[in-house]
Image (cartoon, rainbow, N blue to C red):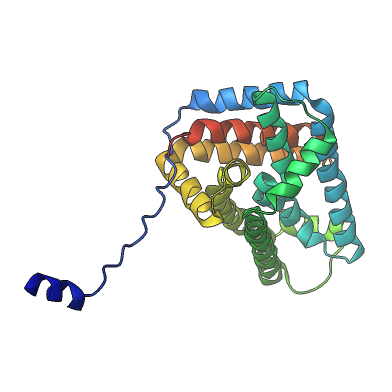
Length: 271
């Protein structure tokens, strides 16, 4: 009876649900990067029409944005906007992840399949990730504008006048140095939380916070190699910009497919 009374008067136990373990991230070598790039080039060669189609979207988008900035006489934002492509590249490359996965699994590929997969991706947390990366780009553009006003003044310039100020005056050169350092810091921060989080959101049914944390953990585990990968992306994007965005027809597909293969090497299939 005493035992029964004790049981009746006791508080019901509350079981705390266990949190799902974070995905396991792997240590990689420089050879893994080279293999990922090689696999990206191979995927582009096996399904070139999808790469050229999505690459063309970036090219036309780049031309349109630059034309819009020039129309509104905002040449000081052209370079930051071009550099900003690297901030949102992992998200924009989502279409390439679909193609690479289907090639990996030897499935049939069509535009209907690719577009259907992209549409389905936004029913999960990828939409939130798009908001995060887009917000990062807007913050970078705001900082670039503030730096421009601080170093070269709050007034309108023609494109040729701006180039002359940036490359021939002390304030312009300082603006170039500070702007590039600031941009590099922001770019690496965005790169850290997005490098594998976006292909992970496509591949797994997880929340975007877990994906971002996993991406940062992966970068922390492989800091030198990820810094090299970030610099490689920046260099290829820079070459593409110097070509008048035409280089994006090739660099975006190769980098997009390579990002998928890097994710497959960087995150274990086990949890």
